[in-house]
Length: 551
Image 1: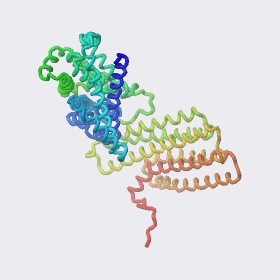
Image 2: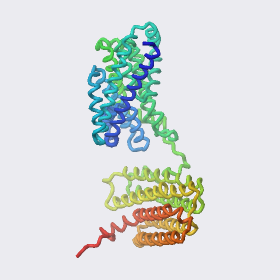
Image 3: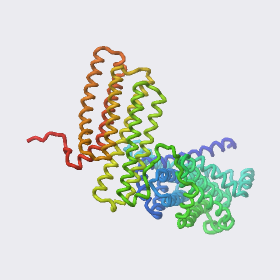
Image 4: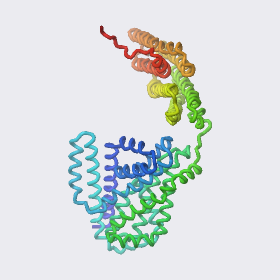
């Protein structure tokens, strides 16, 4: 067989290996992804539990990169502390070694059976078993790729040119590390790269010491992708976890390179099978690194916080202004801070409605884009207030405090949902009108503008109700819900009257106009639920049901 054909076959087996790993990862994520993410989020309460959770989830996903990106998202959102997040990454790095250990044994004979069972499950079963069938297919392809890889290399293992090339590389462990790190970064899979190194080592194509250096590089490369893909480039604090993980692996790789002349011969004296020795070295490196850093996680986290301090732009409208962290020890003060911050959501929603009103009057693309950005401000403020309130010690809260906390959460949640309706429905509708080059009829546009003005007044009423708790204002806001039903009915009747009169501008925007009326009523429903319902429910002035009870 010619050398170019052999290179194509070699590249094909590598591609098949990567595709097998990809199928296993996507199958697991589709079948168990949400549960794994939920389990991981629940486990981040202590260092040791977090370490075990990272190990287990990564062993299932076969990707420390996937685990790293999930935990980076938790840490960047402030949902978990940096110490357990770092512990998860130590566990994730150790978890990648488990699948390598399993595949280091000669189990290629079961590959056809795995593919057969996987295809049957994939074609015949429902969603859950179907995804597991995808996992079995991926494992079968992975084993076949490894077997074909070894068979392909057998005739060439004594080729002088290959020996010369690999001999030159093996004399420079640093080059091996860089090469493997680059391959791992490109393939997003340290498992696949380590398996390839094991295949080379098994046939004697790569000497053991060079294979161990390549394994160090694969471990380093696995830490690069979370740095590039996780966290926000605008907030250094969100990059603490991936950078911290990369730094501890850099330290580990540096120490590993220094110890390689002593560790390499010792590993081979314990295990004569080069493939198994590579797998054992991979496991040993990650376990020793975890043992070394585990006691140092708290000072290491402090160092990372010092290197990468919180940096939020002072002019960021989504930055909380009144959530005083020191006030959390005094619930009454903390709830007052949260109430004051919640009023900012009302201001932002009012600005969104003003932008919507302007967009109805003159469909300007820039106006629509700027108004849609305000929904991100609502999301940020709502998330910050929720995190602040849920951080309060429930044992320190009295019954009235619990009730106040629930009222603030209801207010912020409903205002954020009202903003979603404006962003996803109403502004998208106005943008659709603009793109189609049509316009609402003058009467229809005036109706929509008047309803938006009424909504702006209701936002101000809801904000005042959050502060005052006035029962009369609450009843007035609830009455607006009934009034909105009348307004919607009147506007709908006028719209149909214009349709019957043969108005072309009304016919062109008919469905869009009716959708806008429905969405505006939904925004008002969120305003009523935000402030009036919690107060009236506490006072026993809300009916449990609107259904008529038969005698």
